[in-house]
Structure formats: structure tokens, C-alpha cells
Image 1 (cartoon, rainbow, N blue to C red):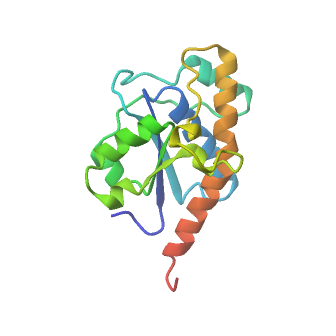
Image 2 (spheres, rainbow, N blue to C red):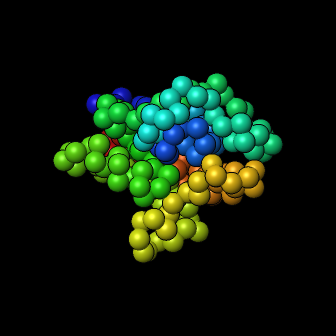
Image 3 (tube, helix red, strand yellow):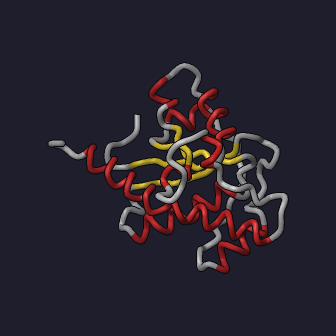
Amino acid sequence: MTEPHVYRVMTVCTGNICRSPMAEVVLRDRLERAGLGDRVLVDSTGISDEEHGRPIDRRAQRVLAAHGYPVPAHRARQVTAVDLATRDLVLAMTSAHARALRALAHDEPRLRDRVRMYRSFDPAAPTDGPEHLLDVDDPWYGDQEGFEVTLAEVEAAADAVVEHARAALAAREPGR
């Protein structure tokens, strides 16, 4: 069980070197600006272990730095069932990631319910239709422009994630 005064968020992509660490960096920045940096903890993982131990992709580092974000030391790691049990909100970058996370949660509804599509927080994203319409673009196979697109998608949802975390923390306060 998590502490009532701390809310834990995890972003998840394939290898944990592009999308999920970009989202982690953006969310940390937005949470700090909102005064929640000490109450909302953010980390990231990948569905696969193929990139285990590697840093953030250099193209992702470049786009983050170009937009004024700090680029932290990072080592890719694979998500585990324990991660699901110790996070309040698990943000999948694609519908395939969401399916893998829900499978990892097995038949535990409380864990499965923690999994949300990252872009479901984007007010301009589609609200009906198949879940894959909310996928964050994978920049890995493209050029630097693809990382710009991914960053824009991540930034578009970030403020609503911050507000979601703020509301969740408020709901935990005594007397609510």
C-alpha cells in the first residue's frame, strides 16, 4: 500500500529509452512547477528488457534539452508486477503497452485499473474509438522530427496528469 501523502506515477513504453523517459522528465518538470514535486514521484520502465541498462536515447536527450528540460541520468529497466503494485497510476504509451501491463496485473482488478493510456489525459485526443488511437508516436525508427512529435504529444497530456495527481492527493486527505 502506498503512503497517503505521496502519489506514485510510472510511465511505460517498449524499451524505456525514448517515450517513457521523455514523459517522466516532462511530468517531473510540470509537477515541480505545480508545487507537487515532493508529493508526486514519477519514474519510467519498459515492457521489454531489450534496452536494459541503457541511457535515454541521444535523440530524445537532444529534443528534451532543446526545449529546456533537464536530462537526468537514466538506465532503462523492465516493468515488474511489483511496480504495478507500488504505483498509483501507470501510464502506457500505447495500447500494446496497456495490454501487456494489464496482463502483468493478472486478475487483480485494483492493479489493472491503475493502467491508463497516457494520451487519455490529452484534452485534444480522441475520446471514443479504439484504444490504439491514443498511442504516443514511436520516434525510434524516424529522424529527429519524430522526437519533436513525441514530445508534443507528451506535453499535451502532462498538465491533466498533474491535475489528476493533485485531485488524487486531495481525496486522500483526512475528512474527505
